Image (cartoon, rainbow, N blue to C red):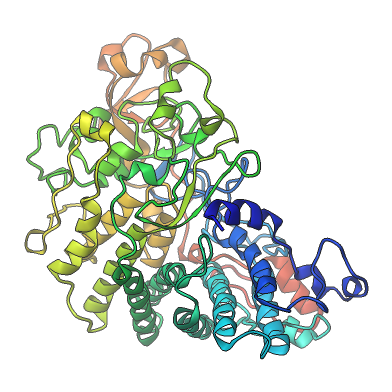
Length: 613
């Protein structure tokens, strides 16, 4: 079966089993839901049941105008992005409710993860419970172990996400009888204990899931990519938040092991240009993509390409701090680069002097629909940009009818997880030092991706390899981060702009202070000459609103008669910093209703530190 058929047809038809937890439902047969008494007969039943996990965990570009877990629209709360006006803030009060029981993917954008929802934990446990009770001896041991691995993979994945948002959470490894209130209202299990259970689930999955289960289905390599991500997050969180060194080491070692399973397979290479990863109608056969979600009109479409088409607004856009983080193509930071115009922050010069991913991510002209004028076209094709100045966008790049495929897991993420996990192990846990061969296999392999014809025609050059003997000397580097780790983190920032990683990266590194925009670069966009690039705003409507900042920090405000002075870094309209926050925002508060529900039944659900009761 093709990937398109699996993701677009089978997922949309996948049957939810959770209603079977209601005894009233079980009293009668249903035509649209599986019957617990007659299901669980063979592998086909298990596959059907497991298909619905895909929509929750492999969201891709979501569907229609959906934004949960999408790049560009869902993951825009991070230090990379600035919006007009006052910046969106962290929570300041405990919400009435943080709970949910829906099967629809929901996302808390301030924590890059789910709500207090154990639907998917229960779904995994139901699968594992029914297998244990009804399918031993019905299917072969290899089949049984594969599907147990699938169930445990998704249970571990969900607990990884819940822990990433809330820290301690109640741990359930069996189906809970709703009449058993002591089990239902279980107190939160310490984070480390939960993640040890997740570790065990992941080890089992890595050893037992098939290496090939057909196109579009989870196999051992896709499981390894999931595990690589989750274990890097938790291993680094344990380290940088000062929790448990032994657990940090254990989780990071599993991140390395899982990553190496993918890397050593030889099944994927960096043979795709960067642009094609995000704006292709068909990712089948792309040498870098492990798993993707396919879109076929009219059954399943999205809108992410439209919001990258050059015309649609981007309310949160790349700030100067992010633009400055891109390495120059000679492998140097901008302060030390010998390239002509390396110190210029006009968009055109940035395009020509920076790593090729810059050109593949941003338009090479300023664009008013972006709040900072740095417009991301990463998720729209080259052809889509041809409609910016006239004509009607075709359905592929307009409205919510986009059909470009969404990469879910790709090789770059795996190798960057791998190299970072190895470096943390080397710095803090007695692991072997990262070698030049390691760098060549990861960062430099990524930098050696092919360029597409458009980039080549513009004169874009591949970035010079990173050399351990001559690491960039970045004056912006944090004093508590080693030069090599700084470059590993830079590579992630360039590679994953507008994707799912940035907020979770700075959370796990314990660097949320980056979100306090004290540095003026966060209030700025690229260098502009408003006379040439922003003439539409040299009008009375922008008097006392349009501003630029000179190199010396002087702010020039447009007064209607000083157009010749409007040359400098673009100041985001009406910019103001977000409300001050404290370290309590690393974890989401538990809702008042959830705490009260426990209390009414004589049980206790504790609140996260700093949030009170």
